[in-house]
Structures are given as structure tokens and as C-alpha cells.
Image 1 (cartoon, rainbow, N blue to C red):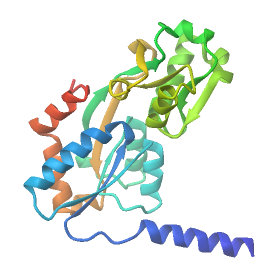
Image 2 (cartoon, rainbow, N blue to C red; image 1 turned 180 degrees about the horizontal axis):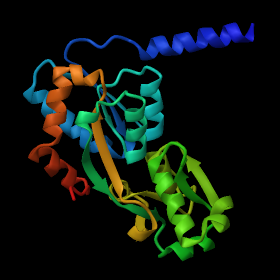
Image 3 (cartoon, rainbow, N blue to C red; image 1 turned 30 degrees about the horizontal axis):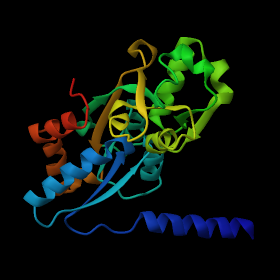
Image 4 (tube, rainbow, N blue to C red; image 1 turned 90 degrees about the horizontal axis):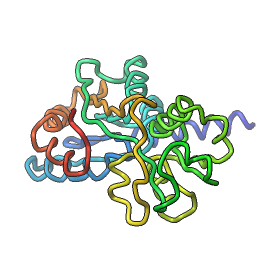
Length: 247
């Protein structure tokens, strides 16, 4: 009986993901840290291209990749690391010919001023928020930095896991943790939390955002036009406005 119930639940879930997209619809699956950038760029593109409607899904890169694998409609995927793009490429769900780098970011530690000024200062703190490393690239970058700094064992019991980088920042904003590992671009938008220090680049791989059309998206002319637009000067200007780097 339990097996039957689980099967029905799975079929219902897949049917929700497989809802048909209408002509002119472009489904986006985008890393949460790019929300403001993509909102601005989709608004601008839509004004110039009447009839195009964007269906936006923001979240942790790993969660988005898994949703696409499970049948969620998506024409364009932008990840916050290369690994999850490679995951979809290996599953033959991302169009290899369209995989390019969209932008770059930097990992920082943000929180209440005076709490910490370096990686070693983390040992004095009680609670530190990071994105869950299994699905959140920012959390993966942070844990890599802990290991290279030789702090991973000492910080294990201090870590508070978040579902994505935005939830991480929210914990720091509300003072529920002493600080959080987030991207520079997120921290710049914070109202309460401040950047306490930038994580040394030698401790983690460069934060790279690859983008690509999915196999389905490569057949959607509006999605093809939009990814072309994301390569243009207007997109670069918006990225720079929010603190992202093009090099």
C-alpha cells in the first residue's frame, strides 16, 4: 500500500513539473545570488521583445539541477559553480554547444561588525551560517576554505546550514548567527550585516557562474535570443552594477 501511495505522489510531482510551456514562455533556473540581476535583465528584454514571458525559478544550484533532471521545465540554467553544470551536461540535459561563463563572484564573511576579521577569528564565534554544501555552491566553497585553512574539524559544531545563499544572509541579518559565508554581491545588499573579511582566493576555487541552454531550451527561439542577450554589453553593465565581475 505504501509503495502505491509513493508511486502516486511521484507521478503527481512529475506532472506538476511537466506542465506545458506556452509559446513565448522562457523558463529560467538560476542560482539565487543572481536574482536581482536576472530580474532586471528579463524586464529589459521583455520590454524590447513583446510577447515573451519569463518563468523564473531561483534557488541553490544543486537543487535546480536535480529539478531539471526530474523533469522540471527549464530552457536556461545558470549555476553558481561548474560542477552542477557538468552534472547536467553529463546527464545530456544541457546543450554543450551553449555552455559559457556568465560572470564571477567572490566569497566573503558577513555579520555584525567587530565579530571577526580573518579566518582564524572564526574559532571565537558560536554560530556560523553556510549554505548546505551538498546543493549550495557557496557552502561548498566555504567548506573547501575551512579545509585548506586547517579549520574544518574545529568549526564542525558551529555550522548552521541554510538552503541557499540568501537564507544564509538572512540568518546574519537577523543576528541568528555571528556571521555567514555569502557572496560579495549578496553582502553588498545587506541592511544590517557587513562584510567582515574577504576569504583569501587561495583557499577555494574561483566562484564561476556557467550558463547554458537545456536541450529543450535550444529549440526555443526566445530562449536562444535571451542567452545571446546575456552575452551583450547591457548584461555586463547590470552585472557590474550589482558587484559581479566579468573577468
